[in-house]
Length: 112
Image (cartoon, rainbow, N blue to C red; front, side, top):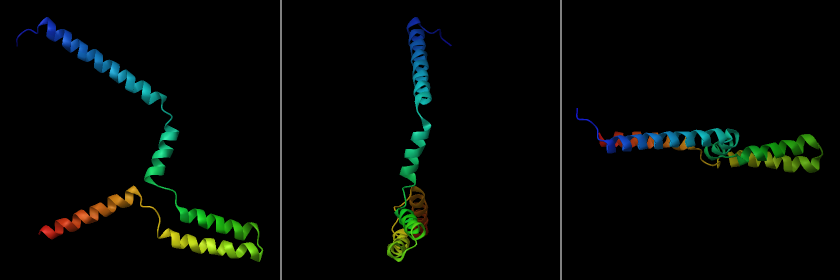
Protein backbone atom coordinates (compact mmCIF):
# COMPACT_ATOMS: atom_id res chain seq x y z
CA UNK A 1 0.00 0.00 0.00
CA UNK A 2 1.52 3.33 -1.01
CA UNK A 3 2.27 5.91 1.65
CA UNK A 4 -0.32 8.64 2.05
CA UNK A 5 0.87 12.05 1.13
CA UNK A 6 0.87 14.85 3.65
CA UNK A 7 -2.06 16.48 1.83
CA UNK A 8 -4.19 13.33 2.09
CA UNK A 9 -3.46 13.07 5.82
CA UNK A 10 -4.43 16.72 6.30
CA UNK A 11 -7.71 16.16 4.43
CA UNK A 12 -8.48 13.01 6.43
CA UNK A 13 -7.78 14.82 9.71
CA UNK A 14 -9.96 17.73 8.60
CA UNK A 15 -12.83 15.40 7.70
CA UNK A 16 -12.50 13.60 11.05
CA UNK A 17 -12.54 16.93 12.91
CA UNK A 18 -15.60 18.06 10.95
CA UNK A 19 -17.45 14.84 11.76
CA UNK A 20 -16.55 15.22 15.44
CA UNK A 21 -17.87 18.81 15.51
CA UNK A 22 -21.02 17.73 13.67
CA UNK A 23 -21.63 14.92 16.18
CA UNK A 24 -21.10 17.33 19.09
CA UNK A 25 -23.56 19.81 17.55
CA UNK A 26 -26.17 17.09 17.07
CA UNK A 27 -25.67 15.94 20.64
CA UNK A 28 -26.11 19.51 21.93
CA UNK A 29 -29.32 19.96 19.95
CA UNK A 30 -30.70 16.61 21.07
CA UNK A 31 -29.98 17.35 24.72
CA UNK A 32 -31.55 20.82 24.55
CA UNK A 33 -34.85 19.71 22.97
CA UNK A 34 -37.74 19.28 25.38
CA UNK A 35 -39.07 15.90 24.26
CA UNK A 36 -42.35 16.35 26.14
CA UNK A 37 -43.48 19.08 23.74
CA UNK A 38 -42.12 17.29 20.67
CA UNK A 39 -43.97 14.08 21.55
CA UNK A 40 -47.16 16.07 22.21
CA UNK A 41 -47.05 17.75 18.79
CA UNK A 42 -46.15 14.52 16.98
CA UNK A 43 -49.09 12.78 18.66
CA UNK A 44 -51.41 15.57 17.50
CA UNK A 45 -50.23 14.90 13.93
CA UNK A 46 -50.47 11.13 14.10
CA UNK A 47 -53.62 10.99 16.25
CA UNK A 48 -55.73 14.12 15.75
CA UNK A 49 -58.32 15.12 18.33
CA UNK A 50 -61.67 13.45 17.97
CA UNK A 51 -64.59 15.88 17.75
CA UNK A 52 -66.99 13.08 18.63
CA UNK A 53 -65.44 12.51 22.05
CA UNK A 54 -65.64 16.23 22.81
CA UNK A 55 -69.31 16.29 21.85
CA UNK A 56 -69.99 13.22 23.98
CA UNK A 57 -68.23 14.72 27.01
CA UNK A 58 -70.16 17.99 26.65
CA UNK A 59 -73.45 16.10 26.35
CA UNK A 60 -72.78 13.99 29.41
CA UNK A 61 -71.74 17.09 31.35
CA UNK A 62 -75.02 18.81 30.46
CA UNK A 63 -77.07 15.80 31.52
CA UNK A 64 -75.18 14.95 34.71
CA UNK A 65 -74.19 18.40 35.96
CA UNK A 66 -77.64 19.93 35.72
CA UNK A 67 -80.34 17.25 35.61
CA UNK A 68 -83.17 19.54 34.58
CA UNK A 69 -85.10 19.03 31.31
CA UNK A 70 -83.81 22.27 29.81
CA UNK A 71 -80.20 21.03 29.66
CA UNK A 72 -80.98 17.34 29.24
CA UNK A 73 -82.40 17.82 25.74
CA UNK A 74 -79.29 19.54 24.32
CA UNK A 75 -77.17 17.01 26.21
CA UNK A 76 -78.90 14.09 24.51
CA UNK A 77 -78.60 15.91 21.18
CA UNK A 78 -74.85 16.35 21.69
CA UNK A 79 -74.42 12.67 22.54
CA UNK A 80 -76.37 11.68 19.41
CA UNK A 81 -74.29 14.09 17.34
CA UNK A 82 -71.13 12.49 18.72
CA UNK A 83 -72.15 9.13 17.26
CA UNK A 84 -72.80 10.76 13.88
CA UNK A 85 -69.47 12.61 14.03
CA UNK A 86 -67.68 9.37 14.94
CA UNK A 87 -68.17 8.21 11.38
CA UNK A 88 -66.57 11.38 10.03
CA UNK A 89 -63.46 11.48 12.23
CA UNK A 90 -60.20 12.67 10.69
CA UNK A 91 -58.08 9.96 9.17
CA UNK A 92 -55.16 8.80 11.29
CA UNK A 93 -51.75 7.85 9.95
CA UNK A 94 -52.31 4.27 11.11
CA UNK A 95 -55.53 4.11 9.09
CA UNK A 96 -53.70 5.37 6.01
CA UNK A 97 -51.01 2.71 6.38
CA UNK A 98 -53.59 -0.07 6.73
CA UNK A 99 -55.54 1.20 3.72
CA UNK A 100 -52.37 1.49 1.63
CA UNK A 101 -51.49 -2.14 2.44
CA UNK A 102 -54.98 -3.25 1.39
CA UNK A 103 -54.75 -1.35 -1.89
CA UNK A 104 -51.29 -2.73 -2.66
CA UNK A 105 -52.53 -6.26 -1.91
CA UNK A 106 -55.46 -5.71 -4.28
CA UNK A 107 -53.17 -4.39 -7.00
CA UNK A 108 -50.85 -7.38 -6.64
CA UNK A 109 -53.75 -9.76 -6.90
CA UNK A 110 -54.84 -8.11 -10.17
CA UNK A 111 -51.48 -8.80 -11.81
CA UNK A 112 -51.86 -12.58 -11.47
